[in-house]
Image (cartoon, rainbow, N blue to C red; front, top):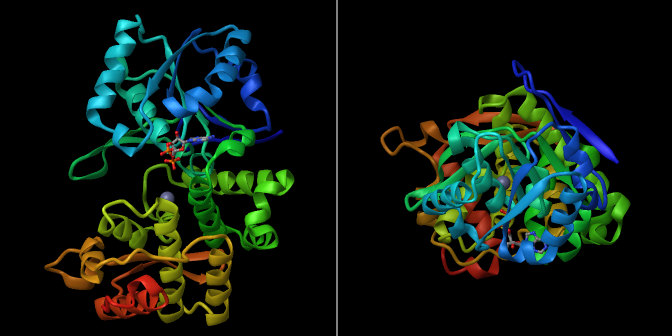
Length: 371
Ligand code: ADP
Ligand code: ZN
């Protein structure tokens, strides 16, 4: 068993992030120490519920809680205001009061939605994260961000609501589809690039064989979760420290938007990291060999191999910049070296366009669409 204690400055309550294979069978015991009410509402999407609800509910009952399962449909569309409202009304119909607690069993969608509901239901009830995707284990479940999407964009309604426990059971990953594994791998790579060259070496030593090597898998999950926790603890609410978690995400988000969210988050972030590595050689003094090694590693992990044919103008338009101030507001997280990020403001738009053009030339699907 490995564990991290996440202590947020100025908060009485710290919480544990526990990683232990088979932990889902011992969840009841883990929760027993938290002094929560026995009324625990477990939110899971239908697919995850089919796979794991039985194990988890049995473990919770064995620990003395009275768990009730609330299922939601799988998929990003579920992260909506109307679903949050529906969940809250189901909680009321089941007699939930302000002493109850909510647990999320699932990926980032479930965690963000259930956390959002927990944060506002009767002005907030305790919340527990049991992430089942790699992405949620190393990223979404840690740090207390919750939210739902609006038609205008993702996560536009949300809160900060720290969980009381984050329970990581890597055995959940055995049933996780490849596409979802790759999404999580991108965030682990990100953690390595911003904080830990040794994590990059570990990924390089295993690449996609990682999922067949439990020891190595547990190590990289734990290390990435720890890095996320450290960054969040240093800066709970988004100032510059937390911003380094956006490495690869500025362009990544623009690619997701330009693809109408067909490009999975991890793939978009992987392309965003390839882009940021290249831009770092031009604006942050990153050695070209380091950028090249980084790019090779990202590809060796099954990421950033094929970009769907996207309109470069749409990508540039989706970058967060103020049209009147032109390139003033282009903010990128760049690297001076592996593990040494810098927040760079005001990258010249023509340079961004040029690097993006090179990225798309490397990609057969985009040969026809020059920047
Ligand atoms: P993310 O963490 O990437 O935001 P989502 O919550 O969107 O993930 O979940 C992605 C998909 O993976 C959903 O369809 C969900 O039902 C499924 N899923 C989540 N965890 C598992 C698992 N351990 N095994 C199989 N499928 C899973
Ligand atoms: Zn991300």
